[in-house]
Image 1: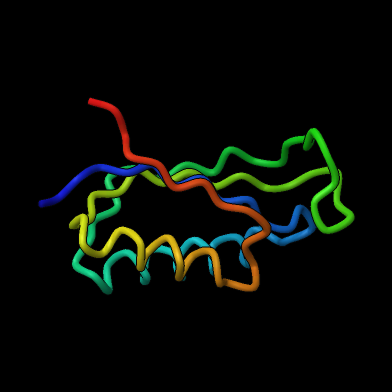
Image 2: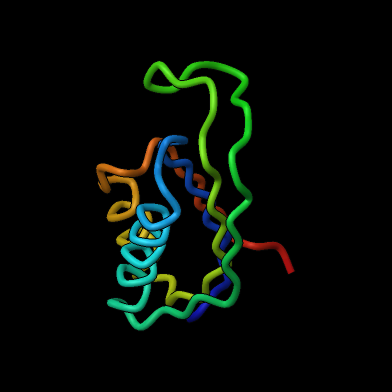
Length: 96
């Protein structure tokens, strides 16, 4: 059964646009490797954090709305979480 999920990823604020694009492409590759689909992708830009994450006060926020079979959702989340470039991630089911 395919469900829609929202994935928000925080990356290093000092990344160049090319590096951010590479991270985005890597995340897309993870999603498509399990026959998932990226429905929407947004770069929310650099934002201040409420607390330090790896000694940084800011992070670049990337947002994805994806459709993935439920049996592969945990794999997608785990693979994104294990990426070296990702500081934090939030993976939730989108409410209808």
